[in-house]
Image 1 (tube, rainbow, N blue to C red):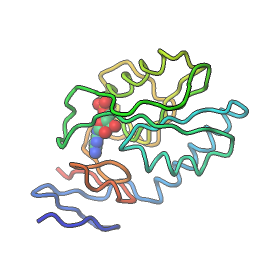
Image 2 (image 1 turned 180 degrees about the vertical axis):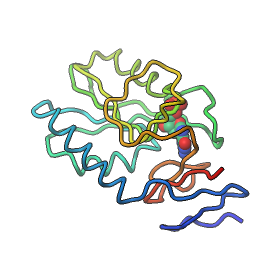
Image 3 (image 1 turned 90 degrees about the vertical axis):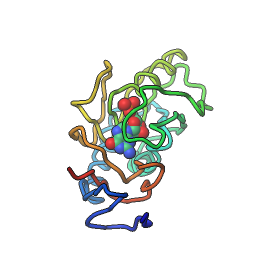
Image 4 (image 1 turned 30 degrees about the vertical axis):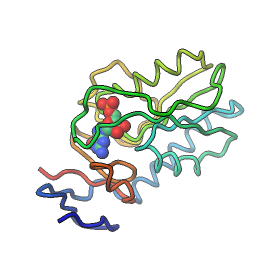
Length: 187
Ligand code: 5GP
């Protein structure tokens, strides 16, 4: 039976699949604070635009913004996702474009997780077409063993193995994004 996810569970069953705690709320908040300090120091007086990739990045984006101590702007892209599957379809589609004019601006793309790197590659191409002053990528999670495309992730929260994770913005068939910590599919 599909139960409503509540916080701080020791395990979450989704059908016959078991998810267990992986990165705690405290670990996430500590790392996000560190990233916020680093980015704030790197972008002093540059008025960067943080561009979040919806839906997955909304929680990371929100917490990261609270740790940014310099003036900045915020905008969002929305890409089509995995659908309801756990494996990438290998296709990316733009569902919502940016509102901001990014020409000559310093851009920081904010992602929840980089898996194959396809989404980042796609976004970098879209952004480059507008001739920004600079472009960097911040991702809370990176599955380094899964990356297939030539992408550079400048700010990494946690490097993780190639396992399916949920929580803190990351979904399973659109659910579980509201969890404060990250859970991993148990073998
Ligand atoms: P990529 O384009 O790098 O292959 O995949 C990036 C996107 O795939 C992420 O923004 C996220 O939506 C989804 N994704 C990749 N790995 C996971 C995962 O372990 N869990 C969840 N929930 N989504 C993932």
